[in-house]
Image (tube, rainbow, N blue to C red; front, side):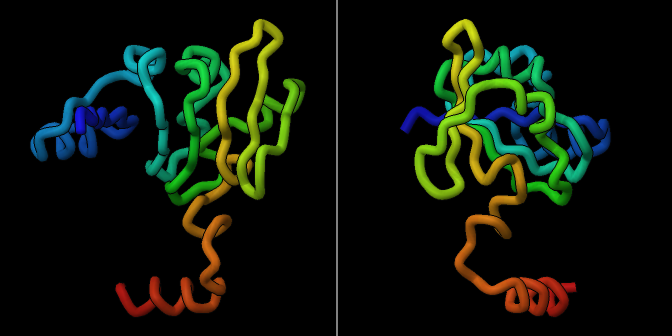
Length: 129
């Protein structure tokens, strides 16, 4: 289908693991202009900053699957124009016309957009440990 998956990792050990698994490990700044979808999954705060989002391809979809609700620096976007497209989907416009689609306002997709009750998610996580 022509899909290319890049890994941008802040932790050097995880970056090495991704490389050993066959993924191309790059800096986010290098690939941001060509990304159609950007999903975070690090658990580290502010790995996607306003600077990164300005570099993203126009119309890029941005979401967070990590362990921290602060992986995407949403606070830095508050002064921009937000338009609700549908539940959990916002289009954010920069003054120059650049736009991205932000899912779940940068919160965890698997918790925010899921129809599974949080108790079930908690029990599932607890039994997997």
